[in-house]
Length: 219
Image 1 (spheres, one colour):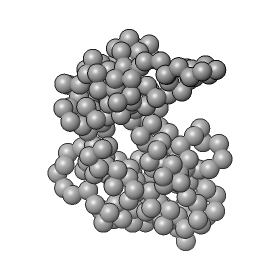
Image 2: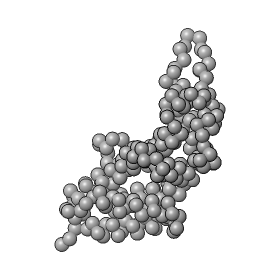
Image 3: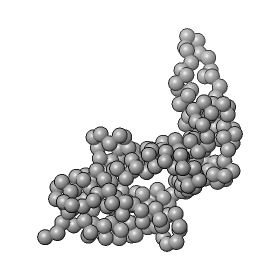
Image 4: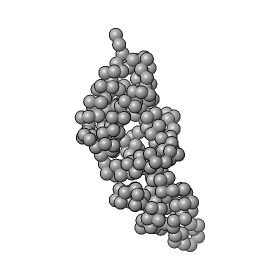
C-alpha cells in the first residue's frame, strides 16, 4: 500500500519529494476510481479515498477541493492512459489529430467509435463516468468544468478529423463538422446512459454509416 510517509532514508541521498507526490497522486486516483466502482459515488468520501490510498486527508485537500474534483482528474488520467494505449494523442490539439488519418475516413472513425463502445461497456469506466455525469447535472459549475476538460477535447478530435476529410473532398464542402461529430457520438452516449438497447460495435457501425451517408459530397 502506498503511504504518505517520507521515503526511507538512504545514506547520502535526499528524499525525492516529487516522486513521493507522484506516488501519492497515483494512489489517490486508483483509490477514487476503485471506490466509485465498488460502492457508488454517493458513498465515496474524501476520507474513504484517503484511507484506501494510504495518505492523509489533508494531502487530498491540498490538491483538490472536493471528491468530484479528485474523480474528474482521476478519470482524465484514466482516459489519457486508454488513448495512449490506442496510440491516440490527447494533448492540446497541436500535431496529431487524435483520431487516425489513414486516408480512409470510414475506417478511422469506425476504429475510434468501436473503441469508445468498448470503454463505455468496461466496468472500469462505467462507474466513474456515471458518477461524473450525475455530479455534472446537479452542479452547474462542475458540469461546465467537465465539459471543458473532458467532453469538448473529445469532440475536438472528431472535428479535426472531419475537417481534414472536408479539405480532401471526402465529405460535402458545406458539411457542419461540429454537428457531424455530435451525431457520431451522441447516440452511443444515449444508449449507454439509458441502457435501453445493447451498445455494440454493430450499432456504432450503423451510426457511422448513416452519418457518412449524410455527409457524402453531392454530384
